[in-house]
Length: 113
Length: 112
Image (cartoon, rainbow over all chains, first blue to last red):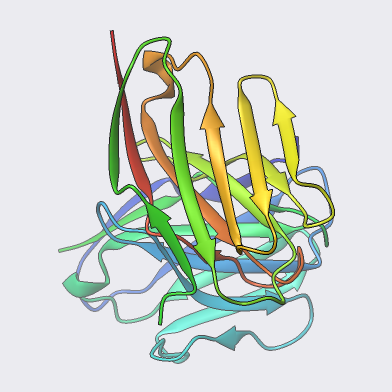
């Protein structure tokens, strides 16, 4: 099956710093990538949809200036959490679509101290 | 408004038994219905998916049953094993390129 990677898998940062998370589709070109957030024992919450070369579409309530998304190529999307605060601590998961199926990355655990 | 309702929230099944998880959707424009399996600390893994042109799809021990008129679909895990213990999410979307709407998840525990 198709493989999606995320880096880093875990990150701990100080409050006020920025953190970048990379999402890569390793063996296919992803026309669309999605970013989700998941709190413990809860379902996935869509944050934004990103298409290569265009601006991301953010879900209602998600601050686009805080969660910067860049989809520079058909295999790479990045999520930057700017000026992170403890309430941003969560499990961030990306998915990549080959136009037919969505494949998820392994997730990134962000802890903001 | 929750567009995909999943039940039960948790499920305990004896080893060798059948695990059944149900989902109902509201948006008739949905045409892609995947199930994902998630272990703690890991991303969701695609288990099996179905489109509305078939009523059932089987892959190994996993079967999706789909009822278009009732707007319901379910996952059956035959011969459930302790290694199947995980959280299962149903989802729906209009196509592979549109965001998935997830159910709230079912925590399955298979006990020996």
